[in-house]
Amino acid sequence: MALAITTALYLLSCGLGLSAQRLRVRWGAIHHVAYAALCLCALVTTVTAFRVALLPLLAVLAAFPRARPRTAAHRLLAAGAGAAIVCAWLS
Image (tube, rainbow, N blue to C red; front, side):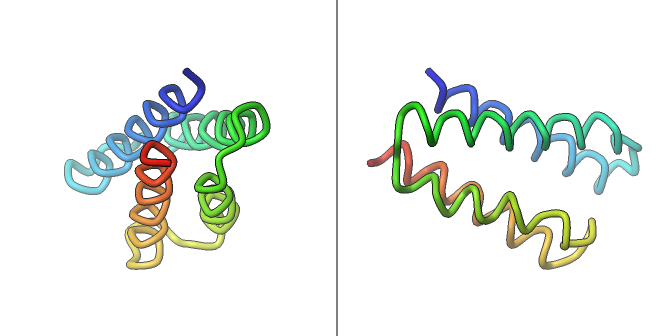
């Protein structure tokens, strides 16, 4: 269940980020709240239902504050987070 919530928060955060980028909508505060919730949920999921695949997710989420929005680094980190979540589902 916790992994499903983590996945939903990731998809929400990606949706907000993509719509902000493509539609020029300002979701800044909501996007940051979704990111914070994702970080917390990923940490709880890693601790309660230990999945090795979530360790890279935590590392990627920790690196996000250093990546500026609308940059290749931001998109690569988002893709890395998605890959870690897929790996967690498959493990």
